[in-house]
Image (cartoon, rainbow, N blue to C red; front, side, top):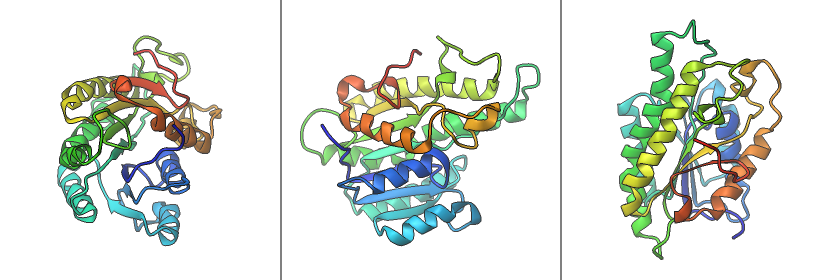
Length: 259
């Protein structure tokens, strides 16, 4: 298999960082999606200027306002996307939006823990629930019996620091709430892969690498991976996935990450 071929895709947290990189690379594919839905809190605001420029050049890019921690906003976004798709369903949901609070074990707080967990773990659950009817529709409308990202898939952007097996970089970046939220997101991905298998929906957790974004730089050192390299790598991996990969935890190069 070559490049990713998908009719419709939605990316959350798409105004900057990895989310924006994914949108840029999706639009640059030899056979770009018919619809790329890019969501962020304020698509018309100052922090979404790059997205606005892209939308002015690509008629297949639709910006959608979405606050991932607000159930009403999620419901409105799903309705808006459904109207635009006109009954064809959504092939690929990429739950990318995430936040980080650089707290240590001794100074972690209830407020930060709850906020990080809400955005990084609960929001992907709620978004997947809201878009499930559109994902099911896409799966039903696709030929063949196997699973693929071209058919119907939920991709949760996780992190290797959520690996309970490895617990890497604990000496320099404890980030307790972030680690816990990503470990929980990995379990959610496993649950989704089992619960949605009967509907033909592939589910995957992705470690995008240590990427040069605002979040990636929170530890103080310069991350080794560019947004371009991460986004390109993830789309290449997505193009090759099948039912045997559903429920996996992979990195941007397709390597299995230990739970």
